[in-house]
Amino acid sequence: MSKKLIYVHDPMCSWCFGFSTVYQQFTEQLPENIELIRLLGGLAPDADEIMPESTRQMVQQNWQRIEQLIPGVEFNYDFWTKCQPRRATYPACRAVIAAREQGDEFDVSMTRQIQQAYYRQARNPSDNETLIELAGEIGLDQGRFSAQLVADKTQQRLLDEIAMARSIGISGFPSLVLQNDGKLESVLVKYTDVDAMLRQVKD
Image (cartoon, rainbow, N blue to C red):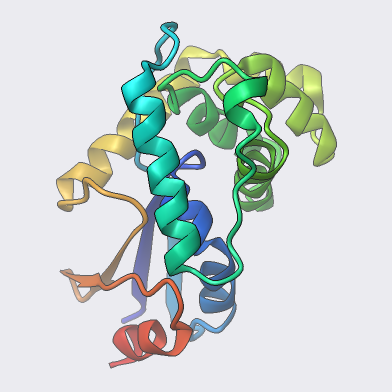
């Protein structure tokens, strides 16, 4: 029986950004009998309030820790002066779902584009205007994307994926779970060691 590897993430999760290069290497080397399933975990619900200073400091400290632990990962701290940060990642999650409507391959490309915009270009993916710009940059039909972004079914799909992730015990991101013959096994995320993760899923 084929195995399923479930990857739970959020496009505005800084640890997911830190994991992105190793994740790509890892998934490119997955055995053919393992089906990859990507789920959005929904880190922070919709919010209009500007992020409190204490939360800003917490997030920036997280960025610094990631830079120290994962070689080659860099954040653009201009975001904190150029943008009005909100603790809201659901818009970015909905953007990934809306992008999928135009092809499964856009799940990964939209996630990457959001990460680049947020962490490297100091743009705010909590804003729908930014997300629509990003959709155009990866070749999506912006009109169709704009409609899907705010559609009720897109929000419901996000809630369904969050519920699915929680039903298998996932509350933090990034997370990997291997499903084999109906059994679930957590795969330890290794931010700098592709081979260790490959051994876990092959055993």
